[in-house]
Amino acid sequence: MALLRPHTAHGIASKPLLTALPDSSPLQCSPLNDAFALLPAHSSDHVVSRAIWPLTARSSQSARASTRTSTEGPPFLSSRRQHPRCPGTGIAGARYARYATDAHRRNWRAGTAFSTSENSGNADESEPLIIEDADCVVVGAGVSGLSAAFALVTKHAATVPRVLVTEARDRVGGNVTTVEGEAGTEREGYVWEEGPHSFQPSDAMLQCALDCGILPDLVLGAPDAPRYVFWDGKLRPIPSGPGDLISSDLITLGGKLRAALGFAGVRVAQAASSTEESVSEFVSRILGPQLLHRLVDPFCSCIFAGDAAQMSMRAAFNRIWRMEAEGGSLLNGMVQLAQERTKAKESAAPRNPRLPKPQGQSVGSFRSGLVTLTRAMAERLGSRVRVGWRLVGVQQRAQGGVVLTYDTPHGTTQVAARSVLLTVPAYVAADVIRPFSPTAADALTAIPYPPMASVALSYPATAVREGAEKAGELRGYGQLHPSSQGLATLGCIYSSALFPHRAPVGRVLVICYVGGAGNDAVTQMSPADLIAAVDRDMRTTLLHPSAPAPLALGVRVWPRSVPQLNIGHLGRIEAAREGIKEAGMQGVFLGGNYLTGVALGWCVEGGYENAAEVGRYLSDEVETMRGL
Image 1: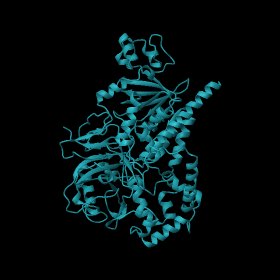
Image 2: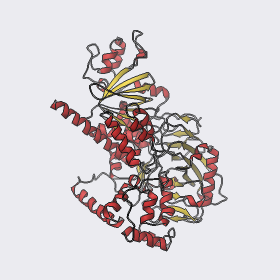
Image 3: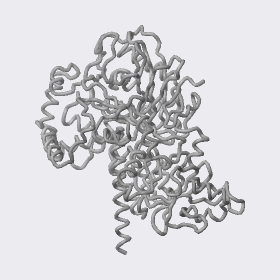
Image 4: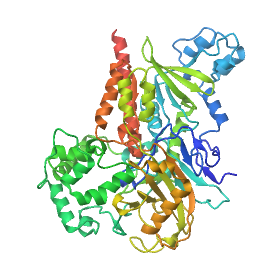
């Protein structure tokens, strides 16, 4: 019996321990006010898990069945080209009718599509079968793809009535990986995340939860829970405002004065207009080296798995970059931003009164973990979602749109689509578009994805020593570890302190992260080595040195984790889009966390924006056709 049971979209048990995922995804990380939450998306690398195959949406048998069966009946096929002997079918029916039996036609009308291998031997079984005709195909059923598809179905159904979502893996959700300890084992009573951990409860996220029917399951972290940085042998609270900065022992008096003057724009050098600033250069120029090394650098390494010296300030923190660039100083830019928000609020529609009003720096999740969100979206999309479908090619159609070729459990299958939205990782999208645009593919391939490991451990609550926390009590969001402090880990999340029912009474649950940019060695470490490294750092920073050995819940290694928004990133994105445009691939769109940012909420909001973009394109296409 498996020791661990994942939350899944369809309640199917997980695969055995230490099984490698054939199609894993990048681990995404949320910003600081997302409680240091690591957030993921999608990928095609192998992932080594000490725990389980996460979020298995279906068993392989039911996954195969899901690609054959539609609960919607004939409408999921095009009715524009009906075959006289197969009414209600479109392109698929026109080709399929050559060898369909009466039984096949009855099943088809009930919503079942058959591959050529199931048909009469009179047909060439190697010939791809076009079984669907969609207005938009969303490739990738991670958070970005599910959000886009959900928005297309709920917000743009009049313009985009036929939506299909395809996923190479046998499950949906990307790297949303909520795991629950198996009943009757020592892991009973634990719930943890091996991918994304939480989200910032913006109105857009809350409205999405409401639309999905899961708002009653929302849980919010304490708005005043502190965050810490381990510096000079001690956990020190991160200042949450000007008042806290004055009394903080994380920054010296000289560092505080330097940061205050820089924030106000006093004696700040102008950025060189001919070069793109890194995060390190921006912060050092304006706020001084102390804030860089003691706060911003560990923030970038733990939350974004990145190197502040390589990350582009404009790409990674565009809002802050714009505040300084347009306002002349961060202070003036903040004032201007507040004024713009006030004007926008006055002209905006009233806020939905059904949405809660999170306070302070709260972060959100759901009672049963983040899988609640992806499961709800997938359930509402229903038979529009096809798992086990790996995209292997995209071609233009003479009459407009594209044809997508898939390897499926039935063999090679083709889908005709007016538009396609690629929400897979950049390096996967590069493989798809390389045949028609090497320039775009090269630009996407240049986006790095460093490795990251997530390690979930539990200790008795009495193991927490007195320091930043009270002895025997774990409170707060988590802690960051600057690289100069000699620790192997980048930081950790206090999962059991953030949300209820994540650990049994009397136990604490921490999720720690190892790896990131410049640390490829993490992929060569065994689960035992990773657990030992995390345990050593926990005893150095948070626990009594004599604390009992930890209960290891799960170890997940992501060979390609978070896309890095490094210097030149915006140019690479522009080159990719221009390459697709120059190749004449109308209706092919890019989406995903390398465009929107890696926080879970950004992925959801980006999915809704992608849906609006597709809707506008198809609406314009219809108007153009009417004018001909």
